[in-house]
Length: 498
Picture 1: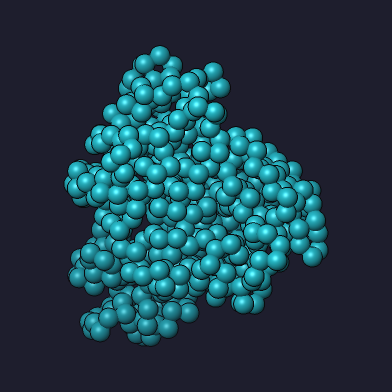
Picture 2: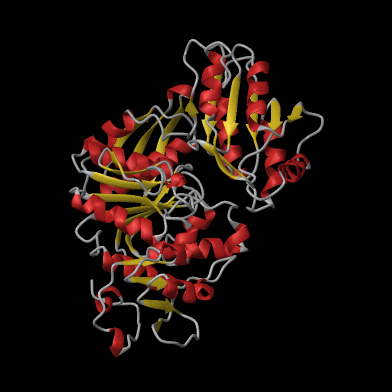
């Protein structure tokens, strides 16, 4: 593709000497540069791509695209390098989402579940879907490799929304396979760095906003500002009106506000859940009520948060023209997304073990409240959890307090410590633990899981929180395989410990 076509819409001024160049690829990592490539100079939290321009040219780059005051032969200036990278990849892949129905889901918690619910609804309606979530990138039922596997967690730089060099080619593969509906999770990092700006989103879903990623955003206001940028890219906005942050978007054009609180509660409301029943492990049911329609909803996925999740998914689908029957049929058979309150023990096991991705204070609190509603009389709750390294440290003490206040036994352990000392992370968590309640500190996560299982009695529930669908652990030495579901399975099947 000609360099002028790739740079169209970036605001670049291309020297005449480069105007006829044909581009073979784009990279923002100089190590990935091949002859005929464009090099995009991005500034990250640890490294600055501008420091690697010479290396990129030595590897055969045609030009370097930067937003810094940098001169030199082959250097092209743009107003915003991050935005330009996204525009370039969108151009290079032929604007792949054009002609698709595009639905984006953002928020702190619930993104994956809501996205997968929407996928099931559209599949039931007969539309071929493509999804980009932390648990998988799928074109129809076919996985798309994003760098070692189909989960975004498999990518070299794991993140909720992949970088443009992964995102746009994945959407192009979906387009070529005949996908009509694209559903993806939009992270605050991606929105802040304008990775999604070339898209026109038909429906945007806003789940909630709780404390997370403050190591990057600094304040909750800046975090909200990043999330709300999705509204600037979108037509219809489906909003969780129970959440005070997301409710602030209700005045935006095209906003549809979903609420589960009682009728008469102050604030705008477009859709409300009436006659809500929590059925424990059997799921939830309620009456979906809006000005246009009223109908019953049942979903076997347990948890009070399933009410709001199903409302958001149903409203997004209905706003896209999906028939009501497809909505209710899909939700009535949806048992949850992988690693989201997923039971991993068989019915014959005398106790239950669940894995969940909860890694924020709000998510852990909601998870444990749900599990308390599910337990049988006399049953105890054990939670095994840790906090990720190189991430927001302020949540660690709070999560320790939440765990010990809602569980009968708290086991504090490791969870992707990355470059940090796991013992230091654990000590910060333990500062919040109620020392009058039973708790244990076991640094090795495998040993912590085995301890929790050995303590479980008939009727108990063991919750492994934080990793969910992940099949790896990240330490200072790098990423290594770690499958806590297999640890549980081997234990239950007779103590065949891996």
